Amino acid sequence: MELMNEQFRLAARPVGLPKDSDWQRTEEPLRAPEDGEIVVQTLMLSLDPAMRGWMNDAPSYIKPVGLGEVMRAGGVGKVIASRSPRFAVGDIVSGAPGVQRYWVGPAGDKYGGWQKIDLRLAPLSAWLNVLGMPGMTAYFGLTEVGQPKAGETVLVSGAAGAVGMTVGQVARQRGCRVVGIAGGPEKCDFVVRELGFDACIDYKAGQLREGLKQHCPNGVDVYFDNVGGDILDTVLTRINMKARIVICGAISQYNTTTGVKGPANYLALLVKRARMEGMVVFDYAERYHEAIATMGAWLQAGQMRSKEDIVDGLDNFPAALNMLFEGKNFGKLCLQVAPL
Image 1: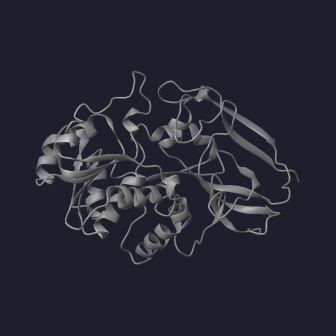
Image 2: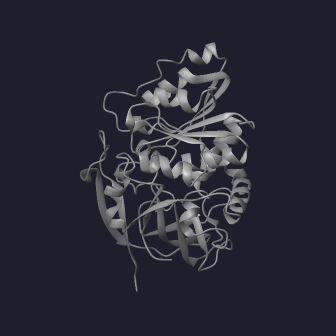
């Protein structure tokens, strides 16, 4: 029986928050694999803030999704046909299937394309979170760019989100004092009680500056920024000498229609001889195995948590993606496409 592949393609460049009309739903027959190729059935997709940037026709670290193309997305799936020696039918794999039910193409090499994953180490959804791209971003962004030292204060925005929750837990393992910034008392409570942060500031309460004074009395040594905008500007007033600011994302700016707001307080970098550096996770692809081994061991030992917020059904993709920008997700946002 011929399989039909359902897809979400980018129909228009969004202005502000993506609308239903920015997407085109298509369906086409699934072709058979050629030599060196595999067919993957998508099981679960990773919904990430970076996807909003990929929709813009602007220079970035990766080319934009073209109009009419299947929307780019990471995910995990099951090999259902293989003409590659690297994979067998039934293998569970991680890669970038895009927003569609099936993917067919070259298997790729050791550091590109698809990789086998071990569900004995962690459940499927964790491979899109702590052991997936957000976890790799958190681990290498903090350890390589932030370079935290035991006893230092590490501050992370978006602390209840996929990257932020892992940043804080890795910082705790490194012996740091960890303070989060999150939206709402429920998320702040989770960050402290479940993830082990020393404190969490509710930015929605409008007391960010006072919260930083209370919970970072000795200043901030490492700031891991997932938010940008006014929060970054405020944090710059509290940085210590030789502080490191990791620019990972700026979710507060992704849907702006008036231009990105840059930090007015950037001269704090001069006064404090501090460093602000951007990071892109793909730069560390050859070292992902290091982070997976380390954090996988922490997960199995109960020293780390991986929390996912799972929406069911490919049909719900447009609304689920916008949950990221409306603050409606709690934990790593995933879209269940098919059962394991």
